[in-house]
Structures are given as structure tokens and as C-alpha cells.
Image 1 (cartoon, rainbow, N blue to C red):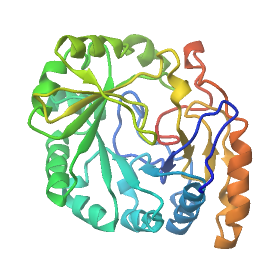
Image 2 (cartoon, helix red, strand yellow):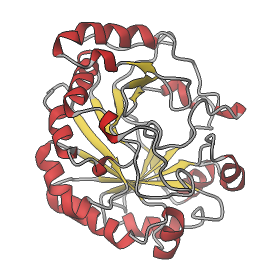
Image 3 (tube, one colour):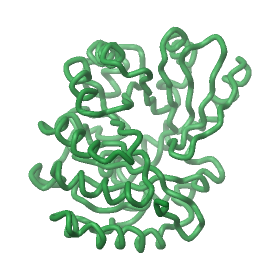
Length: 328
């Protein structure tokens, strides 16, 4: 039997978010409003072999799902090589990416061929002008073409991440529902979270996902059961729609009780929480396959120090200055 990562609160961890870069070419208001500022030289990011080794260690400890994150993962020239390296382990049932989508039209098919099984795309508005204002890039049409390319490449579903912001997009539910009605897209509204650099925007624009949930329930949407390796979204479906709606509500009571995911940063540090403290170094154990046993032991021992909550309700964002730091 495969051992299972378990913390002091009996939470089990089936899901690894593996960042491969903190570089991003978008300037989203809630993440990198001033654009990317280097925190590490590109050559210091995890190599394909290091990505393979760390994902193998997690897989042998019961991880079933790996998500490649950033920054923007597709900025890595060796991105398809990293996909193939992680996909070598058959225990990883789902290999996903979170992307801003600007390279999907060109590359979705090659990602699929390399072994990627799922895609999340960030789209915070369906209005091209507002999309430009939020992201700093006039690329909505290009991202939409990328979603079409993903379906053409054989992806059966695409997830779309939308950061919910008061007076920015919270009144656009009708337009989003119209968009997903004939398309197998899971639209996920994510509550705006406070980071070290984003306090002002948070206090201006934070809105509880409860606002969207009540609207969905009034329209006949029904909540679906959650799989053990699923992310934190509450997923709703409707008989008249091909698409689904997810809500990610980190400020809701007991959000952390169902935590099933861990994070490794692009420089090889294990982060037990998105809003935790300094990461636990793993990179010294990623140089050789013979270090696998020691790597697994460090991961298991580190997990015992995971806290019960992220403490966001207390305004504590830990060391997270922006969401590109360890992959959001």
C-alpha cells in the first residue's frame, strides 16, 4: 500500500502545486501590478530532472495530482520537457497547468502530446477593454483562441480562473454563464486574497463568494461532491449548461479543514501553506535519484509542522508578497 502524507490534524495530501518559475509577462492588478521583479536568476529555477525527482517523491507518498504553476509556466523554454519529466511517474493521475493562456493557441497540442492532462486559464473579464486594464495586456482574443486550441488538441474540459473583485467583475455573472452554457468550461470565481503588496486593493475590492453562491442557487445550480484530489473549489452544475461554476472561498469558516495540497516553489522550497512562513529547503536532496529516501523523509517530517489555518482572517499573509511567489 502506498503511504499517505498526513499532518497533525489528520488531513491527507493528494495534491502538489509545483512552481517552475516566478516570472510572469502579465501585470495583473491583484498580483503583479508593477510587473515582474526578479527574485531569482532563471538558471536557479528547478530543472526538468529536479522537477521529476520531487514529483516522484510526492507520488511515492500518495500524491495523485500535480499542478505546474508560476509565474507563467509556459515562459520556460523547456516547459514541454518538464511536463514529460513529471509525467514519467504513472502514479500521477492528473498533471495540470495554470497559465495566463497567451501561448496556448500555439502550444496546447504539444503540451497534450507531452503528457499534460488538464488546463486552468486565468480570465478575469470577458470584456476586452477591462481584461486589458486588469492584466496590462491586450490579449483576450489570443487567450480565447488558446481555449479553442486546447479543445481541438483533445482536452475535454478547461477550467477558467476568475478573481472575484467588487465593482470590477462581480456583476458579470450573467455574461460568464452565457459563455459557458454551450462549452465544457468550469468557471471558478476565486475570492481576492490579501498579500503583502496587495493590502490596498484587497480592502477596496474584496467580495465574499457567498454573493455568487446565492445567485447560483436562485438560478437552480446545485453543488457537486468533491473528489479527494480535487482543489478547494465548491463546484456547481446545472442541467441546462455544459459548463460548471466553482467557488474558491478562503475566507469562509473551516476552509482549511479540507486542505489536501502542498506547494514546492520554483527554487525547491516546500511550502506547507500559500500564506505560511519561510519554506523548507528540498533542493539539496534533488541532485540525484539515490537521494529519494532522504527526500521523502524530509517531506514527511516537515508536514508535522503544518498549521491548522492560514490565519488570513487575522490579516496575516505570511511571507507571501504576491501570488506569483509560490504559484498562487
